[in-house]
Amino acid sequence: MKRVPVLILAAFAPLMLGQAQPILVPDVSQKKVEIIYSFTGAELLLFGAILYPGGKSPDKPADIAVVLKGPFQPITVREKQKVAGIWINAESTRFRSVPTFYAVASSRPLDKLIDERTASIFELGLGNLQLSPASGATPAEQQRFEAGLTDLRKRTGLFAQADNDVKITDDVLYRARLAIPARVPVGKYTAETFLIQGGRVIAAASLDVEIHKSGFERFVASAAENSPFTYGFVAVALSVALGWLAGAVFRRF
Image (tube, rainbow, N blue to C red; front, side, top):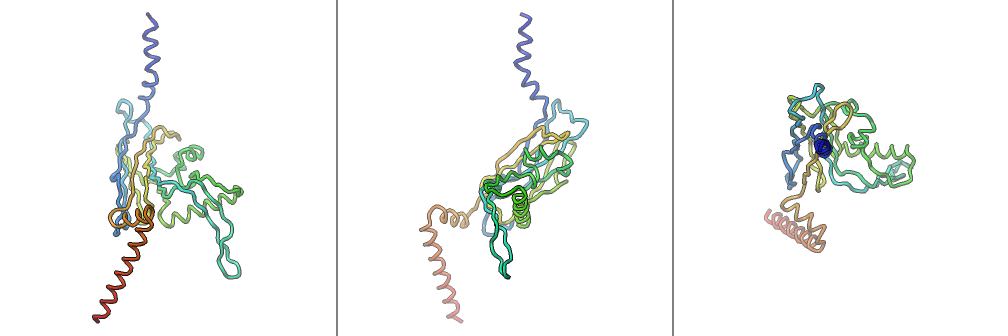
C-alpha cells in the first residue's frame, strides 16, 4: 500500500516538471495582412506575456527574441563579373531552403544572449539561417554567396535584424514591431517567440500569419497561376481598352 503514493508521484512527475518552466502566451496585431494596389508596406506588432510558475518573476530577468519567417523556396545565386567592360554571370550556387522573408528582433543583442550553437539550432540571427546549399561549392564559396544573398535581401527589406527592439514591461509583458516592406512575397508566415535565460532557450511559441493579395491584385495573381488563358485574355482586352481610350482623348484635343 505504501507504494501507491510513490507511483502517483512518479506518474505526475513530468507534469510537475513541465509546470516548473515558464510559458509564453503570444499574439500578433494582424493574423491576415492584405496587399492591395495602394499597399506601401505595413508594421506587424508581436506582443504577449510570460507566465512564470507561481506568478513570480525570476531574480535574473529573461530576454525575448521574436522572429517572423516567410515561406521557404529554392534559389540560385549568381555572381557577376566584369569581363572586357561587360558584366556577365560567372559562378553560381543553389540553395534548397531560403526564407522569402526573415526578420528578427531581440531585447538585447543576440550574441550576448546565446552562443553560436544555440543560435544555429533555433536559426536566430541572419548569420544562422540554415540555407541548405545544394551545389558542390567549398565552404568559403558558400559563405561568400550566403553573405551576398543576405546583403541583397537586407537592401530590399526582406531580411532584417534589430537588436534592443523588443520591449519588456515588468518582466512579464513584451512587444516588438517588425516592418513588412511593400514587395513582401505572399504566403503563410510564422511568428515565433523565444524566451532566453542563462544562454538557453527555455520556452518558445509560434503563431501563423497570412499575407495575401486582395481585390484586383488577387484576381490577377490567381489568374496568372491557375488560368493562363483568362489572364492573357484580360491583359489583351485591358491593353486594347486603354489604347482606345487614349486615342479617343487625343482625338478630342
